[in-house]
Length: 233
Image 1 (cartoon, one colour):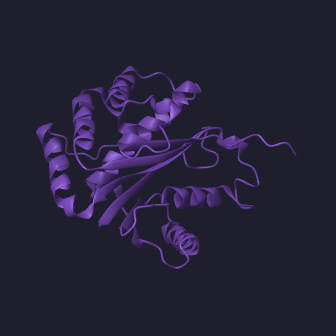
Image 2 (image 1 turned 90 degrees about the vertical axis):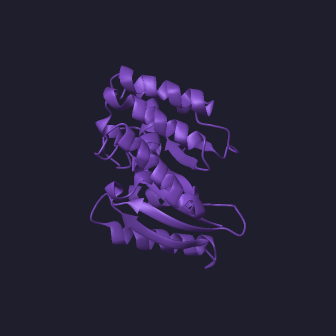
């Protein structure tokens, strides 16, 4: 089986005023790709939403559409997985692989892509977020090559603009929700009742308190809650 994976992130920069970062993906079975794409686009058309769905442009008037996306996700063969890093200011030399914050980003991508289904292959797409895209792709590819001993199940790795694919919009909605939930607890963002309403709906459907993460073995909606440990020097 071939799967398409769409990766997006929130608060991934080292000095962006946030103590958290979140990187996640939506996994789509390739045989279902066209049908699921059509289904999600039909929902946008139903709600007369033509613009790209972005968490940082969250609107109360669009909550019915956001909820319909959640319903579609939980009733179709789609999966979500993310790593939520809390207290990223604690990241030290060991966490950073004796390098930079950028190296930690690669480390998280590598961990996120430790896919364990046998006899499966993956096409991975990352949202274009800056001008260093080619460099990032090369480093991720090098890292995966080492991890899988040159036998990586990832058969394609490339950048796409988020507005070119509906699955990036779904990923952004979920990653943004997870990041908001954590930032709200840390008093980094003001309480937003509309976002809280949507977050409660997502928690109801997933069965988990988003800010606490999920069970490690969860496959449908998986949040890995990572808190860098304070080390004794």
